[in-house]
Image (cartoon, rainbow, N blue to C red):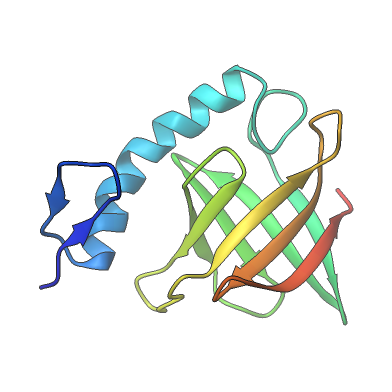
Amino acid sequence: MQGKSFPGSRTSLKLGENELFRKVATNCSLLLRLLAEAGIGLCDSGSLCTRQYEIGGGRDLTVTNEGDSLMGQVTARPKFELIAKSDSTFARFSEDNDYGDDEIVFIKDAGGRVTHAALRGGNQEVWRAKRVK
């Protein structure tokens, strides 16, 4: 099992990638709730809720709050968990799929309102979707 090191940290984690994500996810649900209560999050109302982003070609990204988890699903694809890396960048996680370094990034306007979601993979933007709901 390969360990993970974090720059600037004196700690090296001896966890596999999936185990690391599961452990981080436990704490991220609390982070998401705190962000929502502070009005920083996916919903302008200050609480997490369903949001829809139009990718194009008949595909949408739907983001929902399911219990303590933030979930995403692209039309006709399996659901995946969104694990917070920051208030606007989320790792995609699913026990059934290996998404590698894929991230969903929520893009805000000057007023702090989320207007788009983008999928980044391998440090490149794969698609950008406009918020429609």
